[in-house]
Image (tube, rainbow, N blue to C red):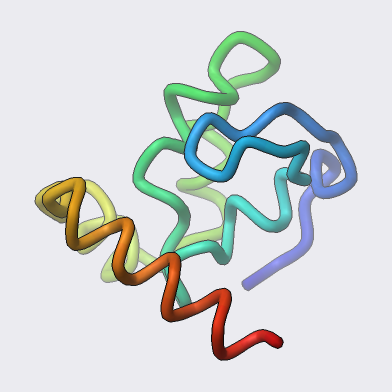
Length: 86
């Protein structure tokens, strides 16, 4: 994933409950951005335009076509990710 001028900007992440950088949000889901990235960042800059610049057309299609995960599944994945990072 390419770097952007917004990478070091920080906001409070409603998903994780702490401050996160835009660069984290870009890679939160592996090679795709967090599903909430547009909602979280749209008040600060044109995040859709930024995403279209850094994502390949295939990544953009997968990102915009992705269905949100169920809340329980998301929580289980976050717990597993936290355990793996210990």
